[in-house]
Every structure is written in structure tokens, then in C-alpha cells.
Image (tube, rainbow, N blue to C red; front, side):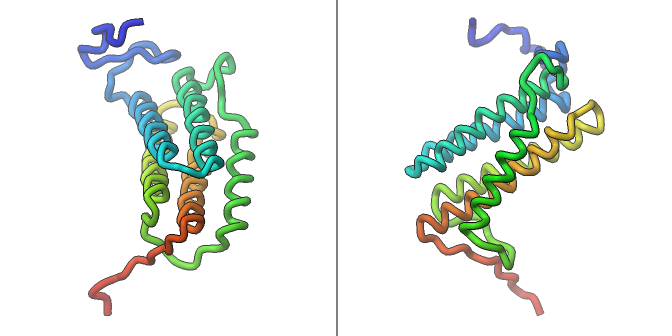
Length: 181
């Protein structure tokens, strides 16, 4: 398979179940956001010396291929779909991590360790992907499981970043609201 086909040179691309679309189509934008998120997770995983964290990030990257397959196919049962099991896994992981890090009592600045910072960056990309997915859902059918998955994913990344800071001994910083009376 060649690396380029020249078919996209005029601003159109081929999507599995949608045919040829303009590269600025909202579906193409959503697919691009989830691809960018997968890249961010890969970068974060490459900095993880903690096997379970790296495994979680790689697992999420694989799930994002399911997300993109579902988006590309229009939710066809012939292709992989986000299922209730995906949602249950995310919720279980969030609950497990919350049990370790405890409740949060204030806003926190993203950052801390290098790995936590990279996971926070991935979380911000996940939120953008979710916002794009919500916009897409107003133009095309998007299954509710996919919308829930996108929301739970960013929550998991948030608590995972906090866990990395705790594991690596980094304290979390609260925002300072300067010049407030």
C-alpha cells in the first residue's frame, strides 16, 4: 500500500462508511481529534516507567481505534463499536484510582511530574475530541455509548494524572487568583 495516493490532494478524503468527504467535514475533524489523542497517549506511555500506567495508556489507544471505526462506519454493527463493557472498564478504573488518591477539594493546575503533565495534555485533547463529537452528534447520528465513553475517558485521564503525581511524590498546585479583592 503506498504512503500517498494523491486522491486527497484536492481537499477530500475517503472515510470507510461515509465515502469521500471534504477534509474540513466535522466527521473528519472528529476522527482527527481522536487520532491526535491517540498520539498524545502514545507519547505519555513512552515516558511511563510504571508498567500498569503504560498498559492502561496503550489499552486506551486501542479503544480509540474502536472509536474511529465506529465513527467511520456510522455505527454499523459490521464494525467494532464502543460497548457497555468499555464504559464499565473506564468507570471501574476511575473508581479504583479515586480510592487511592481520595477526593478533590479545590481546582488544580495541570502539571507536576513529566508523565502527569503529558497525561493532563492528553486529557485536554480528549475534552476537545469530546466537544467535537458532541457537535458531530447534532449533524449525524452518534450512539450514546460513544458520547459517554468520550466523557469517561477524560475523567480517567484526569485521575490517572493525579495518581502519577502522587506515585512520583509531586504535590499538586492550586491556582492563585492574583489581584483579587
